[in-house]
Length: 42
Length: 183
Image 1 (cartoon, rainbow over the protein chains, first blue to last red):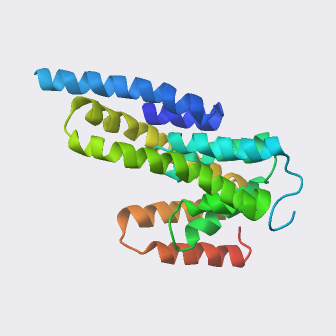
Image 2 (image 1 turned 90 degrees about the vertical axis):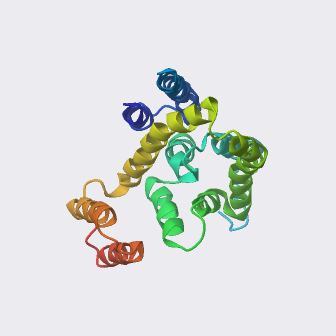
């Protein structure tokens, strides 16, 4: 989903990378942190 | 345009070119090639320093030539503003990422198993895939109406995914198809 959103943001919406990478990157890292911490808690 | 520098470039143009590549260097997750869509947006769409075809040719030429992939930045810089453009873009794309890598590599290596480092690498992977796909789509721009070009794309993807054929053969095939005027 994140790869698809990145593709749409860059190709269709033509957003600058300076919005896309920090914006989606923050969401991606937050999701990965949540998944990894949930996995290690189990 | 002179081969040494583009006389039409003003001081703000030089600063803009350097500043943009400096910024892209910090955002280049997945390598410099992943920043190609933003370079295209800046040098082709916003500033009109290059045409679509010149931009794609710059990347194709650098990718087909031996050496690091990042050299496509030098070709784009040269085509936009001559040798001085090449120096400015290469300095911009190399300086922050090299400095950051030297500073952060040891930290990341020591904490490889820690949650923040693992979350960062896992989170950035899908973004890298999206950026590389966006680069691929952008590179099809000048030949998007050609069925032969799409057939060549399909053959390349299939060959690289399912066989161990050297990319050199595919580059040769592309050159042959281009030279015969089929694309």
